[in-house]
Length: 322
Ligand SMILES: Cc1ncc(C[n+]2csc(CCOP(=O)(O)OP(=O)(O)O)c2C)c(N)n1
Ligand SMILES: [Mg+2]
Image (tube, rainbow, N blue to C red):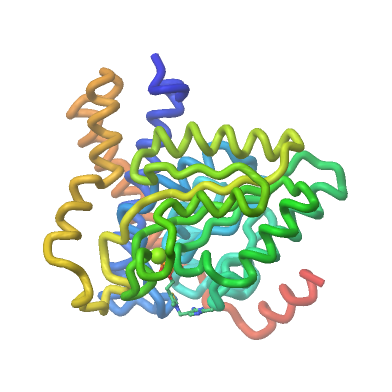
C-alpha cells in the first residue's frame, strides 16, 4: 500500500515523526514555562513541522541542512537524539553542537542557523560548493522564513548557486508572518516560487501543511540536485499557529485567522489520510501518542542531567573545530 509515492512503512514513520515534533515543541514550551533553564528564545513552529520532516525524508546524515529556529525540534529526523535536542535547548550540550544555540553539528550535517537571519544561507551554499568540488553526491538544503527570504544574503546565494549549478535546494517556509508583518505586505508577488525564474532554476509552491505533497516535491528537487541538475526553490505555504514567541499578544492578527488555519493542521490531516487508507486505527493513534509522550518525557529528564558546559569544554570544542 502506498500514499502517493510513499510506501506504508515510510508513511507511518512520517506520522510518528509529526507526532514527535509536536510533542517535543509542547515539551519545550512547558519547560520554559516551568523555568527550566532553556534557550531564551522559544520560537515554536507548531503546525509547520511537515515541511522539515518531508524534506528530511530524502536527506542522508551526511547531507547538509540548515533549518529555521521554528523547526529545530524536527532535527531528530537528521539523526539527533531527543535527549541531545533537549539538552541543547537547556543550554547544556552547547559545546558539542558548536557552542551555539543554532545547532552546528557536522556529524549530522547540520549547518548552524544564525540569529542574524539569513546569514546562514551563504554558509549552506558554501557547503554545497564543497560537496561539488570534492565530487561527493551530497546535497545542501537551506530552509528559511518568508521574512528572511528577502535578505540580500539569500539573493546572493541564489545567484551563486544557479551560476555554479550547486547541489542545493532553497526552501521558503512561508508561515505568513515575519513577527507582526504579514507576508503579503513584504512581497508584490503572491507566488514566492516565481522568484526562481529570475535566477534560472526551477521553483514550485507547495502546500506545506500537506506532508505528502512536501514529500513528493522534495524528492524531485533533492534527487535532481544530487544528480547534478542544480538548485531549485520550494515555497512551502504554512502558518505560524502560535505567536512569534509565547509572549506575543498577536494583536495584529485578523479575527478568526488562526482558527481557520488550525483546521489545516498537518498532523490530524495526515492522520485522517492514513486512517482512510486503513494504515492506522484509533487504537494505534492512542498507543503511539502514549509511547512518544513517554519518550519525550524521558528525554527531558535525561537532558536535565547533562552537566552545563565549562569554559574548558568550549575551548576544547573551539580548538577541535579548527
Ligand atoms: C537580520 C535580522 N533582522 C531582524 C531580526 C529580528 N527578527 C527575529 S525573528 C524575525 C522574523 C523573521 O520572520 P521569518 O523569516 O518569516 O521567520 P518566522 O519567524 O516567521 O519563522 C525578525 C524580524 C533578526 N533576528 N535578524
Ligand atoms: Mg515567517
